[in-house]
Length: 70
Image (cartoon, rainbow, N blue to C red; front, side, top):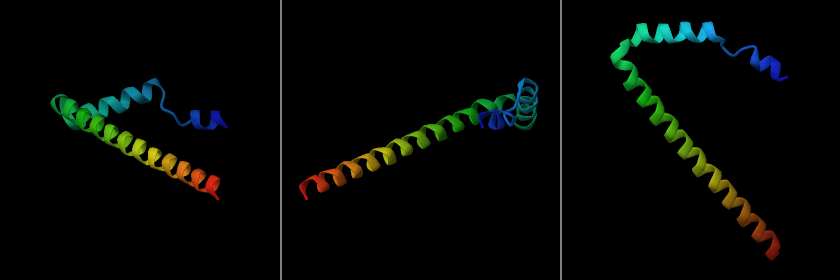
């Protein structure tokens, strides 16, 4: 099953081509700005994920406490 997913990952040549196309599209000066935006997006996503995860765990704890009381 894992080998099926690994077949769709880009290899060394594909990564090089993708990076070259990005460099052509955005230019050398825009890439750091683009990467900062990507980094901020990832940071916000992880923060939201952690918040949702903690809310779910808290809800599960409350449900367990409610079951114990009954």
